[in-house]
Length: 482
Image (cartoon, rainbow, N blue to C red; front, side, top):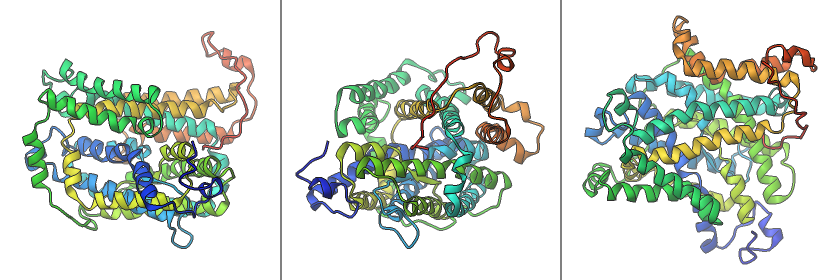
């Protein structure tokens, strides 16, 4: 859907082209609106898991720590996006790449902070900083490690990320983890679910029946509608909104090491291992942007620069209380839709994010969103993560060998997520890493894929499949999005 009024076809394919400001500003803002909810959601989830988010005693003080985490999510998503669009030496792809807080690290972070309050944050952010620096190091040889992460592995990992998070969406829609833990009667009530379902139905309607930016921003609009529904049902009040607004400062600067800095082996290992997956995801996004927007392959310099920006952006965010950043895949589809490849348009969006991150009142409004409304959006978002993983797996050649690798990895990873007590007697570091489910599944898949022979006889899987062995040949397709 290329708009000739913005520029010629050649200009629209040029990353260095700058449309007129009256066109560039709304285009830039829509880039960040498409990922806005996804970007701040991890901060809300981690605050809730740690015990200072929704439903906690921190509510009496206006959730100051959760607000700060939301603020840093916006601020450093903007800073990391500037790294990508403007570039600094070898850092940045100088392409229209939007950065944001990564979902991939949430299953790693939840076991690190679960129920520990803000006391868990020094070790968490220590892991973010070290993991970001390691991610930067990966950029020097990113092209040489892709062989170890084929669609079988990356598809499994992305699917596992989604499966680890769908429970969060259901808990939020039903009333939140604190309400569940306290066994409150309103947990799972029809009122709670009605707010979540309004968000889901509006999102589905826009996804299927709207076009353009309305479809791209379906989750954001769905949450807006759900928010007004919650107001009509008395779940949120004008008094609550104005109180939250008045408590927040007009402007606040980020504080380095606000929560301290601590070296935790479990956090460092977890963030470093997930950096591999995040790096390969960025390679896929860069390739998708150059193909969809410019009709060409990404250069090695662009891929390396994008990975550098991922790492530096994540490490810098960790210093100030932000979470790991990665390129957002929503942006690939948005560029393909608008046909505008200008990196300067995305720079405008990055500046918008930075301004929002410096104004705590924005976070103060976000924190008034009822947990049930957010749950409706989260159900859609995390379900889409699972769907994205399955889409990656569709490019796998489903021979017997790959079926066995997938089966063992999924069984161990998902099983440990469902029953964390199964490894309760392991040392704490190993227990935290294992109960994420994600890391053991990824490690098993990577190791088995590297060491197992390429062929596996039909009989060897028929023996253990209970008569339900698959016979699809699959397809060997070069995956450009991994």
